[in-house]
Picture 1: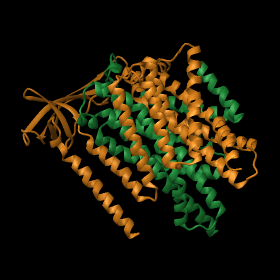
Picture 2 (picture 1 turned 60 degrees about the vertical axis):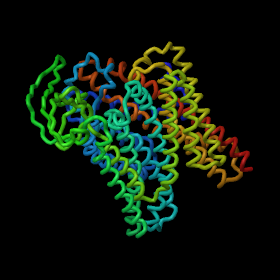
Picture 3 (picture 1 turned 180 degrees about the horizontal axis):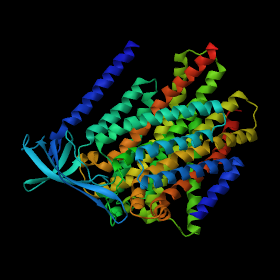
Length: 249
Length: 358
């Protein structure tokens, strides 16, 4: 694995030059934040609050270290924060309703020999899993839409709000398509072993559609998609408000 | 505007209708389904385990009315024991529908009935898409075709007992990326450009990584610790890598090649070398965010098992080694792919664009 890591670093520096160091630094901070999240949750801190705080740090790093234009970065950060809160608000009732937390009978081999009285709230962790899953997709989507839309708005300073929204959707269409692909293909990656196992366990359709692990995967993919969809109107609105302020001056 | 509202109303109502259907679909189930009407806690005991985790074990008596079968309407009850942390067990609540197993005269819980919540969430996604001016047709078509391909893939790997997993994954990956590109870009030469770049970059990244891993004798990579310990280990692992990185690399190649086409249209006398260089410059900005996407997906997927290890008194080093080594290896291969895509796409795109548009 060390060799693989070295290969990655060498290739990265060859392609990106000195910018590679900034990239590695950003990745390093993200990994440290994740480790901090793990330790804090394992030590018994409230799962949701810890996730919220760490996610905010991650979003700051992911957006401000990758975007040079301060204007774009600010709007993108605001958008991703709003989306993160919306995702939390959607996920909490949905997870409560579906109770798709933790692990299931399919994980039996992995669970052997463990004390299952873990003392931390797996229903809350299920919510945190969806939020963390969405962080990368959301920050990338909001940056892409903000920078695309900003470019249009700066070139035509007198845009009506409906024009800004229209432009937002034309920029957003392609991004929505590519991000759904990313989410869908990752769903394929994580579920094909699961479906294979389910087949060997002789599940019927009714068992599959109600299975805890399958439902958890589907919920994650769907809720992340909701995050991506909502990024477009929220970004458009924020940019419209900013443009409006400039015009009134 | 009024027409839009009418469409929204129709979509909204049909979603509520379908969600409602799944709420009353228990007659489709062969297993008995119960609607929980009363829950009483029989026993509560708080214990601290050897790792100083304090948890409370609760035994509840759950009773309710059967919703299907020959005993429909009959009151049944069962006992359920759960830890408050609910790692593998579930706390049942009033109002929930629970699928049961009947053994003799007594019932035991099998699963919470989750289909209503899934259908509702799916409906929410569709409704939001209809609320906004997205190009829904394209999106639905590409998702539908890809799901059909994935279903076929699953059927074949099940029938062949996983024996030709990797070649099948490669074929499936070729098909789903072609579908995605054809739907987004249409049968145009940018699509072919992005497709060839995607295929070459992914192949290069995976071959290079296998080579590097083989040199180090797969040290520190526990291939056997994949989800559900499915065999063949290397095949399952590589298949997961291919699926997970594909979407991101597609995104990258499309971004780079479409920006270069724009550039060529604006400055028709631009040279191949300049195009290649700007391709690298554009790609540079994409690497960080794309690696981030996969980083968080990998971490999130393993969060349950990581915390189980940590709460069982394992050190963070051992936990990462046992639970995340595969994920990190997967991430590194993906990252190599994301980096390699930049020069490969810039090279292919600059060559093809200069020839095509001259």
